[in-house]
Length: 339
Image (cartoon, rainbow, N blue to C red; front, top):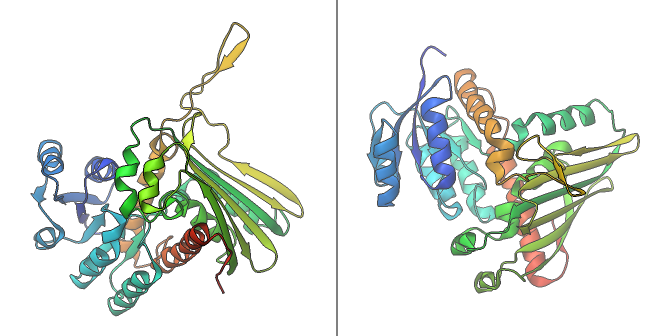
């Protein structure tokens, strides 16, 4: 590109802070020039740690001079409407996953984006940039597994004694939209967007009874039947004692692959008194920290070339479609059609 992309970030919670630090220091081709949050402590953090203009909300940030793009790391319930504001203001859009809590708002964002074809819009399905998952995709595409007929994904979040996430559960969309959405997107990616037919889901709520107020669960399993006889299963929990782990197993007629299992925070195993121990990963940053950098670099490249991003609004819409069907099946106790 002939010049760097000037970016403003909105939302400075745990993930927003990490994105802001990456954008301000670690991504060639990007200059972070503005940050916004309605939370005073987050604005204070930005003023102290980022050499940027600080605003209270998205409309104020959009008026920042010579702004090229906006990076949304706000609550999911705000994503769709804020994405529309960004696109209609003439800025490029990066929006953290998921795009919305339901399908109709996703469709509205897609319709607005079609009216602004010069704007790049990307959704934060950063696992597509992970080398291990990318290698699984390459092997499947090359025919190395034969015909794929089975995918199993697991996402384990560590036990949180304080139940901090319970506070945000009412606006998260439920465990499938919040925690399984990456696995759903990856499964669609591995299957080249193959059409899902039916969703079945079940869950339990034992460790965090406070989730009952919003009809959510702390451990869940779901099955998606795809056309062509492909069966995909998903296990997701907030109750892991081994630390954070995200895995995928793919089975085909000529072989199988397993990705991400058994990774430790440090490449270290301690042996004493007949026992071997290793430290599990503490959170998703331990597993995917560098992947966020690759994702941001891909966004810059898409702006420079005008090419379609690796994770589009349409991809986000379809992932939401599947996650919502899982949620509906969890609540109803019956299968939900996706046809």
